[in-house]
Amino acid sequence: MQFIEILGLFKMSLELLALVITFFAFLISYKGYSLTRRPVFARLSFAFIFISTNFLLQFFSDIFSLLKYGNVSYYFNVFSSFFEMLGFFFIAFSHMIRVYQEHRISFLPLVIINPVIAFKTLSLYFIFYAILESMISYAKMKSKTIILTVLGLIGFSLNILLSWISEFTVYPIILQVFALVFQAFGVIAFFVPIWIYYSGVR
Image 1 (cartoon, rainbow, N blue to C red):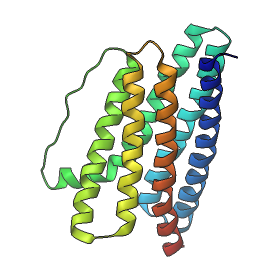
Image 2 (spheres, one colour; image 1 turned 180 degrees about the vertical axis):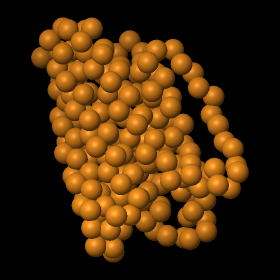
Image 3 (spheres, helix red, strand yellow; image 1 turned 90 degrees about the horizontal axis):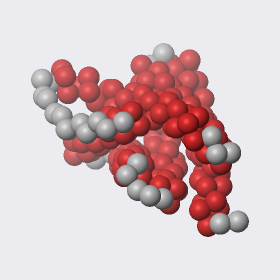
């Protein structure tokens, strides 16, 4: 078995692991919303179910890629990036509301070449926005859980950035594997504050 094929199987294993973690985060968030009816749990429920869908579609995209169905794999990858973008939008949504209320405007330039790159660019925008607002919150509150949230968001941003760069490389699988490692780290780091918050309000 060639090295690239081994990396492909490793990437699929990471996708399944990340799928389990994000779906568990969805269940906790949804249960938190069911008990408290707090909008933050609703937003997190949407975020993690969309990110879970992203991992599931990525997994099927890799399966079709291994089976040499390149066109089918491409479309799965496009839809995967779309759901990933939706997930990160809901993560950043509460920050965007606060910024809108304070009448502050921030933007990053968008580079749109194909649908996958477009969705990943939007994902990067939402994540950088959430990191900025989380760091501002930490400066005011000095909360350790906010630090974990920032670390999780940084993991997400590195994942998106590497995935974005992989669209321009000859052997994208190498960057995609590292991207998934950062994604798994981000999910775990981001999940801890959710669990702490859920434990405190249930």
